[in-house]
Amino acid sequence: MSHFIEWSPIYSVSNTALDVQHKQIIKLMNDLHSIIYTYPNKETLKKAIIRIRIILETHLRYEETLMKYASYPECEKHRQIHRALLIKTSVMFDSHKNKAVSIKEILTFLKKWWLRHIILDDMKYIEYVSKLDL
Ligand SMILES: [Fe+2]
Image (cartoon, rainbow, N blue to C red; front, side):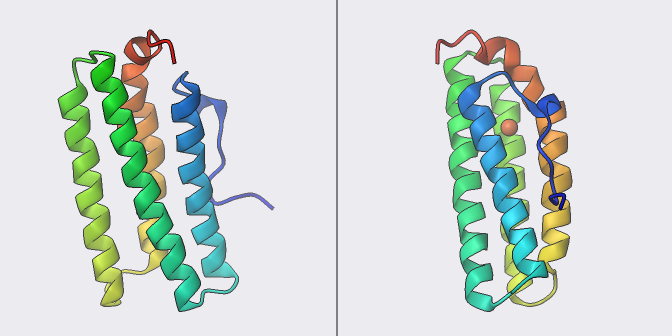
C-alpha cells in the first residue's frame, strides 16, 4: 500500500540529520493519516497531533540553528517562513477543536506546505549547510 506521502531522493537536502528529521515528519504525517482511515479514536488522534507539533517545532528550531551556524544569509527570512507555518498550524489545530477544520484538511495543507518548502526554501541553504562538518 502506498503512503500518503512518499519520500523521494529529490527531497534530500544533502545533510543526514536534516534528511532524517524531514523523513520523520513525513512518517508522522503518514501515521496520522492512517489513524484517520483505521481507528480514529480521540486519544490516539490527540497523541499523534501532539507528537507532530512537538517534532515539527523541534526540527524547525534545529534547522534554524544550523542555518545560522552556517552563516546562511537568508536565515532570518527562512526563520519567518517557519514561524508563519507554526502560527498557521496552531490556528488550524485550534479550529479543529471547534470542529471548524478537519484533520484531513490540516494534513492536506501540511503535505503540500512541507514538500513545497523542502524543494523551494530548504534547497537554498544546501551550499552553506553542506560546508558544516556534521
Ligand atoms: Fe525549513
